[in-house]
Image (cartoon, one colour):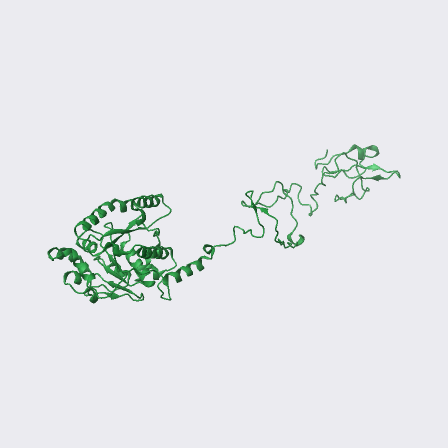
Length: 445
């Protein structure tokens, strides 16, 4: 063996031990050779051109070796095309994390080499043969409808549904679509618990009824004046308000203002002066019935009179309970709203016994209903079990549009008539109107 890695093969030495050809490198591709009938050597595999440089002194030598033929030919370090002998084997491209990993790497043909195959169109002819519907039952193929096929109005696009609801709520034709009662229904919206939606309920129910042909009057009896703000009625200092009616006996028609943009709707505003009425009414004769006399003396006819009460049980709330025939109690779907409900019912019973025998709790409205919580469902079940049919089927959900509307001086009925809040209040107003026709208020007279 030589220093450069070569060695002498005894099969290639000539007489006298002299080599008959160039020494053979270890990387030489040995192939098995045989001798055919003519005496010439032949190979069972196709001959491959050798890249090894042959010696000019001797002809090409074809050694005989036992190396299998399927061994790839060795790289020649002197040939630039082959590269170094110890060059790394090319690895397959990296696979992304979200791609399907094949069991083994197989080279794929280029995209341009894959012929385009047209997808044939598949048409299904109607058949009268019954087919299985996937549950073991047979259905008629001619009348079979896919589950994805819209077959109801609820499956219309959301924008189309919202537009339909908006037209239904706004009632641009001005027709009387909600029934009108036989006589005026005076409803007191009361709950000593604050933040349950008394003012919001008063404003939106009044607007919904007025848009559909009813004459409505809203009396803002809360010193905060939120109902006046929601109807965009001026209620700053110096404006004639309900305080003048209670203390100075000013006629109600001189104080009522028509609501802009809403036909058949009037509002009696409340200013900050009303905060002092609690003290001033103490020394006034017949202090509990001052508001009732003012409403009875109004020359015009109203179908509904809504009185928005403050969150307390003082003289202002007592005046509202004496003037009203019905009590509408908004109840927030939370535990605190139920805690003070018993005290409110007791006060209503006391007013009925001593001051207003015609008063009754006729309507319960669930507000701020959050269907994502179990508490809302529990409160709803408790209220319905206790009050029965007095609870409206319509439930007011939590809706940001209802809270945004007062900042623009509007009700949710006109601010966003296609919202869930407007739809819910519209359904509540329609239910109240239908109940008034089925059960006339005259039965209390």
